[in-house]
Image (cartoon, rainbow, N blue to C red; front, top):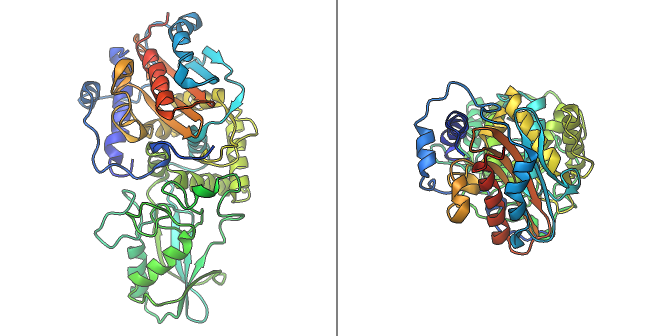
Length: 456
């Protein structure tokens, strides 16, 4: 959701309303669920997406009208598809009626399973609970001692190093160039740049991640100062294992003093502020995280939860803080969430927790930004190139869901209106798959069948 943020967010809510009103019925990376670079242009919209774009909603949809589906009806509709060979030997599944929370399908939904990137739903819900949606993450430059210029990170992963007037990796991002301009206006002669990383604690790369995860096109070291999601330059295909130092060097270049030495350290307490910028609102960062399954944004946002909860600002502390906030929402994620992104193969979350978070988002105003950030089938984000063939086409422009993919794991969690206009939430996790493509096709068939099901 980096370059089409406003269009996609609006589209999601429009499709929700249209459905309610009209009754539309391992570690190796294998797909775009771990790739966070947005396409240069959106795919052609489906007819339903076109129709939704012409609708004029008066308010976001909630539970939905229509006859209540039954557990027997949902089971009859989905049972044949749950046995698809592409889903492998084990599938956890949960379907809830969003209106009253009734469980319509429970196939091992309370048993923890590897969520892959659907875990980002938990991070988003926790964040939007403890921080206002319009909160902006600061980055500052302060005057240090001995001619040091101190770059102090607040944990904004989207700060861009792009030159003034040039596009960064994320739309609406704060600019390091603006910080440099403020420093120049403040005056002074600087001998070195110090990058202050004190906000985050613990390792910068999770010990639960695979060695190939960092650096990669989907993973970077997690530091409170970084540019463009951990990239040394906005268009770099591979991210950095030292994004904080890369940010310091870029600041030196923007100041016109590229030879300045850069190192890590701490600025003096109460040092004079020379410049400050703030990120786009957290609602925007949540959408950018969910649309393209951005692991780096997810880990930084999980740390914002830890900060708000006064927990250690580390992988362990952030995961614990997310779990604690969710329990306060009466959603039990279990004890198996170990990071904020789902990148760790050892993450374990019940499908029921994913479904309950989604259902909560349909009834809790401050969590609606989670819904607005979900990819739309055959239209946006990690679902842009799915729901284009076969039976899954029935879900094009209708299904809104978060994807998740690791080696041997494919997951899909989201919401859809059934044929009678009833809003359903679902979570499907297949954690013993062979072919990712086959697993994704089978998951898409499941969600599309819900869209076409009266299930009464």
